[in-house]
Length: 483
Image 1 (cartoon, rainbow, N blue to C red):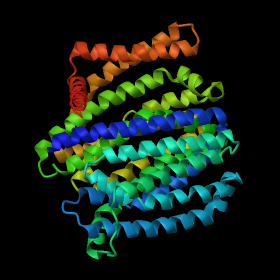
Image 2: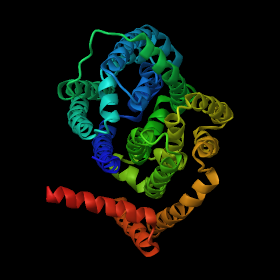
Image 3: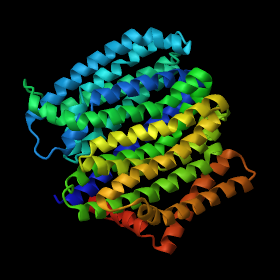
Image 4: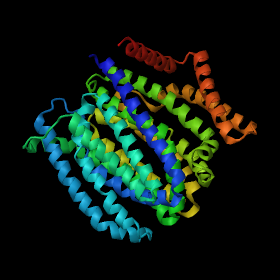
């Protein structure tokens, strides 16, 4: 199969995986939000920081190193597997024994038991990193899609069932752990990879040299992205954190699904073009424009329908989350663009530059965090928008130099796409303001109007990226129908 066909199939299956998986998680989250309180979501939000940091350390950047490596051997996989496993158990022990101190930090006694159980997630993840890396390297997202859909349905049912039976916050723990466990079991059954009893020191040194810098970069990025949970939980309240985490979960549905799809497909694909700068730029340019067309539309539209969407889906008790969601949509709008620019640094083997950039961006973000602590969550989120813009220019400056695709050229390519999506979202918001019907009537009208406005504008303007996506989807449908 050609690289182009692999890419299209990879994006198709990765899209199905991300949207269906996040869709199932989203629906389960809506049901759980109606059964549980904002404080219960806030308690888990306090622990997200520590779990996310742990997972960054477990991976250690070896996944990216395995995907990028040109000639891969069984000993490479086995070496990374044993290393990840040891690190997983060490980190869980650290979480277990620090759980009491963490509960004292937040002044929430429940956190000790919650973290000691939820921390098992890091051990489960350490068992499956190689399976995921191997499938991603092969651009095989069909099997990953099948596994995550099954795991999402089963874990969602477990979480909802526990909530109905009155387990409260433990239903969220049960949902998370069962998701990881089902994914792990199915990967071992269907991927059929087994480690051999070997540890290649030279291979380890080579991959660690590249991957350790990515690990530190990922660690810094995870600390930054999850520090808001820590700050809101510490300086405000579990309830306020609950509102924030719910808003963030809504934002993640379009932002993270798109980012996951594009990043995990584009990295192995672009890695195969790492020695041909002309083809690399051409492919990268197409990916950026197509990605941002969809991202701008979804994020701006979600900001426009935030109030009716939250009230209809999870109820009026979550109304304070509306403003948080609107600001988070603007803060997260450039997230896929950040990842794509950083992918170029990884493709080119510049993990040292990747690390330096992450450090610089997080230093710049420190004043934003301080302002948020003193002036409130609203200013914290506005600061996130400013930080996102600064981060984009830093990322694109260095990636642009590597493949001769500077920020000004990127902005020139995506500016028309932003304007089309902004016009569509403005129309949607205006309709919501004009209609006096209940939110259950307003929301579907806004959604339908937004989709039609977006399609009509792109059809009239004959937007290149829109036509590319449209034709790709039509070809995939025809091929599927022919089979």
